[in-house]
Length: 384
Image (cartoon, rainbow, N blue to C red):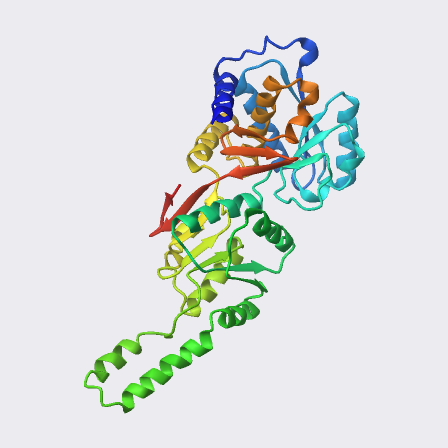
């Protein structure tokens, strides 16, 4: 609690009072920025650059300087730009954006990189991953499961290139799952796999058998009971009470559709997924509601978007808010440490409250304390 009070005090200085005069010219905070400024992802890079400039404006300190360099979304170009930043005497860098671009950065020993990727495996020692990783999301989902006393959770994981990240998140969060299943995202194969996971054919046959039994019985209420059964698709219990679906966008909707087809209803079983960044299309999918997911603070995101749109006349991407916060994080840590030793702060336990939420920093890693949301009847609601 004392640590939290301390950093909140520093944040009040960071946003409201500090004018930068406490630092000498030699102690200026020089922040490198590695983003794509040309090529296919140039627009993304420019928005991130603008968000860092907005952060400096809000901090209102002349002691912070941003030095952007182009990565062209290419690992070798990223390395060349990183070397240039090192030659300029910079030791802390925001970026690169993409996981593929960090692979050579262990060659630049004197720099610490705050990458925006959410991947955490096989990371160079001088790279800190700052994206919304699987551990952060599963920590939040675990809290929801515990609050609602959910006993049996199955985990559906797509056979994609981030399945190892999810396994690592399960291990780190220590979330308890009843069973884990890996599925193919190709629709036809997916449906057959979901049928097997939910024991659909047996449950469907149970319904047919029960109708047949009643038709042959002397039960005086058999006509009414048969009428009720004919409105059903299956009968029989499912051996789980919640489902975590580690998927996004149309692929997520395909999984939910397959679950509905196999007579698994979100009204009876908790449908939980990963961070959807407040995808508006989920609001329209009322048949698949309620559905739950962790994410950053929605109110803070909305306020940032309004500020960004007013300043730059465009809607920011989600990584813009993260990079905005990273400038604040670096500034906050510089109040506690010599600017030349900032890299050491990522090896010790620390916390920081930004617009995105609270960062927990330890052993060269950043985890996020996320909020948790429910989408039901076309309405987004914050649970905690």
